[in-house]
Image 1 (cartoon, rainbow, N blue to C red):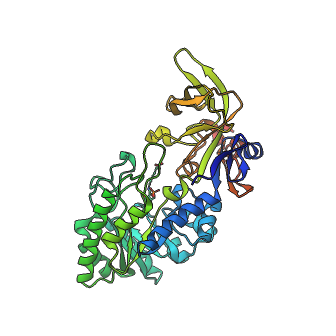
Image 2: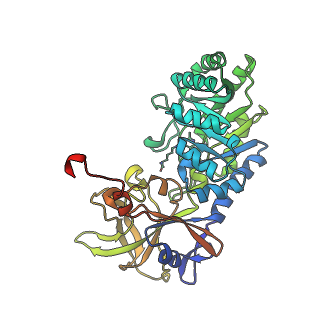
Image 3: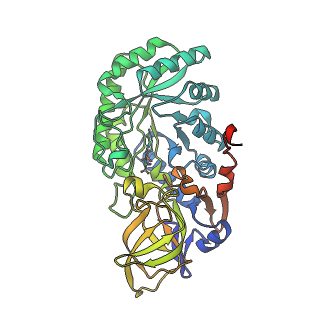
Length: 422
Ligand code: LLP
């Protein structure tokens, strides 16, 4: 169920009219719904326990790492999947228990390893032989022993956008699954490492269960193999990737995904770790923007809005479409025309949607782009010396600005002239 719906002629986030938020926080602004985050988390975790799995949901911070969002999920029992020292700091600051944190990513630095070992995180997912060797060295130097998974690359096509496919042999991620037994032996011999887990993640925004099932079946084969040769494999980390409906077709329900997991790895008596990002945060957020100009050109009609590609880069980067709607509700018989929704940045790629079917729009009115809670604010930048976008969290009839808009002057303050220019 959506927590963004029309009431009294305008769009609300839970029980708060978006016009009120826009007035308080300015635009563009991301607005997140606590109820939507809670529902998504509860549905995900519930589907796993219904399927009989001993699941641990480690929310992938990369999707939305605002500390108020993480706190909302941590309060529900979520762990965290982090990919940098910065994300680790956020997870801890938001109250995620260290032992419920998994560190993924292909380029962990020595400093990040030390930081994570000191914090006492639950698991490292290893993606290369040199990384395995370095983690062993760092752990031994700290007299520590850490749980690790080898992230295997199962060579399965996730059938998603090429820029977010990660489980094919030609992708930079993971280690070839056929080499895994050799790597577990190496991990055991190096010292400082406890090879107790297997990890996989094949891509993001998957809209079919089939590739997941193929990948998980290969992981199951490996777990069987490793156990039969004496490894104490207690955890299986299946990554994230479950898609959401951006309005272009329904992905499988989370129950179907859970059943695929149960069919493949359900019988090992392992803790099954999940790293969902988009599924949890995507539908829980919208981007609110104001129309600056309605420009009727020769062949197109443009709504020039105050959000731009620096605030939401997904359309420019992945040809993503975020359903756009006016905040002020129109009557059913209002005329519908074609609009191109564009931002003020000086690039043609700064286009949110072309030929968007909407009623007549006016300068000054508010629009929303839906399903922008994941990979929205986290990927924002200050390109064109624009402000860094603000974020608001709604809870019932209450809301709070959980990231202030950062004005260009703030960033200017970090720059300086070179000595010879002063
Ligand atoms: N675990 C690992 C190891 C990952 O690499 C990712 C996403 C996730 C979990 C979470 O995947 P999710 O459940 O959100 O699909 N910026 C892109 C998406 C990049 C995904 C990167 N990895 C976008 O806007 O579509």
